[in-house]
Each structure stands twice: as C-alpha cells, then as structure tokens.
Length: 345
Ligand SMILES: NC(=O)c1ccc[n+]([C@@H]2O[C@H](COP(=O)([O-])OP(=O)(O)OC[C@H]3O[C@@H](n4cnc5c(N)ncnc54)[C@H](OP(=O)(O)O)[C@@H]3O)[C@@H](O)[C@H]2O)c1
Image (cartoon, rainbow, N blue to C red):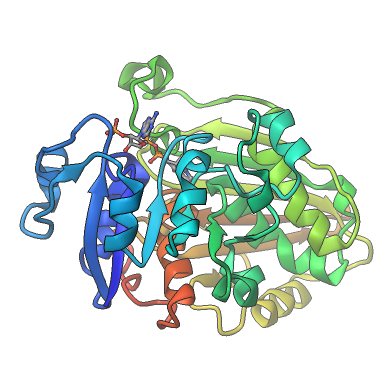
C-alpha cells in the first residue's frame, strides 16, 4: 500500500483528492493537514465523506509527516507549496504539487507572473505532470508539477496539431470557460452566488497566469518559442472547463483526416475521448471523471480549425490528474481509483 498525505486537504482540490483516494485500492490515506480545522474530524468539514474517512485534520509538521507518508500531495495556494516541498524531498518523500510553484521551468518567468521563488533549484527537477505528453519523465521524477486546469484542457486539445505541424502556432487563440470551484474555497466577493449566478463574463483577459504555462508546453511541442492569446471566462456552474481553440491551418485538411490524427495520437490513452465528427463536448459528460472529451472541426471557408475540449477542473484539471501521476510514480495501473463514470444528469 502507498502511504499518502495531503497538505491543504480542506480546500476543493484537497477534498477531491480525499474523495478519490479514500476509494483507491492501493492507498492508505495517512495524514490530512489544514490551516483552519486542526484537530477537527475531516468529515466535519465535508460531511458528504462520512463513513469513508476517519482521520482528523492535523497541523503541518513536515518531519513527522514524511515519516508517515511515501508520497505527499501539496494542494496549497501558490508560493505556499515551495515553503515545504524542498524538505519533503530531502526527507525522501515523493511530491505531487497541485499549485503553480513548480510548473514553469524558468525562474524569471515564474517571478514575472507570480512572486519571488524560494526553491528555484527544483524547477529543473520537476516533471510537468501531463501524462499524455510526459509519461516517461513523470515515472522517475521526485517531484511532479501537476498542470493548471486551463492548460490541461487546452494542451490536450492542441497537442496533436502542434506535434504534427498542421497549424501555425502563432495564430493560436484559446478561449476557456470554467466553473466557480476553479477559484478555490476561500471566501471572495467574485465567487459569491449572486455575483456569479446567471452571469457569464471574461476575466483576466490576456493576462491570466496560466498563459505562460501553456506557452511553455506549446513551445516544447513546436520546438520554438510561441506566444498565444488566452481569454478565460467564469461560468456559473460548480465544475467543468470548456475550451475552444482556434488556429490557422498550414495546409488543407478535412474532418476525417483530423479525426484520424487525433485518434492515432491518443490511441491507448484511457482518459482522452475523441468524439465523432460533428459532435461537440459538454462539461456535463465528464463531470466527476478524469476524462477529457475532444471535438473538432476544420473550417475550409476561413482556413482555420476549431478544437473543443471538456474536462472537470477538479478531476482531470487537478486532483484526478494528480492521482494519475501518483499511479505512474508507484508503477500502478494509471486508471486505478479513477474509473468513476460521469455524473451526467
Ligand atoms: N480549484 C481548481 O480547480 C484548481 C485546479 C488546478 C489547480 N489548482 C491549484 O491547487 C491549489 C489548491 O487549490 P484549491 O482550489 O484547492 O484552493 P482552496 O480551496 O483555497 O484550498 C487551499 C488549501 O490550502 C490551505 N491554505 C490556505 N492558505 C494557506 C496558508 N497560508 N498556508 C498553508 N495552507 C493554506 C487551506 O487550508 P484551510 O482550509 O484549513 O484554511 C486549504 O486546505 C492552488 O494552488 C490552485 O491554484 C486548483
């Protein structure tokens, strides 16, 4: 059994990790930490998990936690993970970090978009945890930087076209709409029901922090530096991200050829579903699952292609993908604990 600890277990991604891992057949959930609920039964915070989790929330004590865990998930706000991850690694724990702290390979880029980095020596050691693109690198990594939710949906949608060189990457535009859990559980005016319900708006237009993360991975796929336009939107639902990509084709391609490319690129991938021609993905059809649904359509009239993807931001966009990464780290079947069917109605 793999002994698992979760730092920041009381946030939304922490809760989703607990939900998935409490049913994982090879996991012994050993330690759950919190800032605000130390000493309280975990199920006091999330009563829905009653009967499945009998741990109490603990204060973070890295030395003690490292003795009790083989792997630690850090589900903390950015800049907080980098305070404890180096010591977990020094003490022999493997770490899957859900924050942005280790996703960007260049310290200067991280500091331009986030804050000063206190453990930059780890940036080159962290594997970017998108298994469909970096599976072999992840298996041997001491530290996995779990991707952001928007980059997960966008990169899975764009990767085949970029890898094959079928689109001009400089023309890539990414539009995404996310459910409100994407903002986390802490109180904020913009996440209140009346502020969000029945509305639909863009935010952080052309300045969202997931932009450099997408650019980093797109540049790796293309073998040269690429910049993209990214516009996130807030959708008044709890979970889900629908992403729409637009890009100019470098040569004429029909729908059948595109579908063949995507089916080949993702053949054998348990969590990517390529939808039949003419079918568009729906966040409801991946709800509660680690799936990414992809639909596509070339537009010969404009010489552009449109690709759409749907994920659950808390599962494939965060905690499910983190568990997929943990399965890889410990040589377990990648789908273990992640086979829940969608809650689509
Ligand atoms: N939400 C998503 O869809 C999503 C997707 C991908 C990645 N992420 C990333 O995953 C990380 C966690 O996100 P989340 O949505 O789960 O956030 P969240 O709901 O706000 O939860 C944050 C967790 O961190 C703890 N915490 C807060 N401030 C802390 C501090 N100063 N020191 C130590 N612990 C602190 C909280 O503890 P208490 O509850 O005890 O106060 C809570 O357990 C973030 O970096 C986020 O960007 C989120």
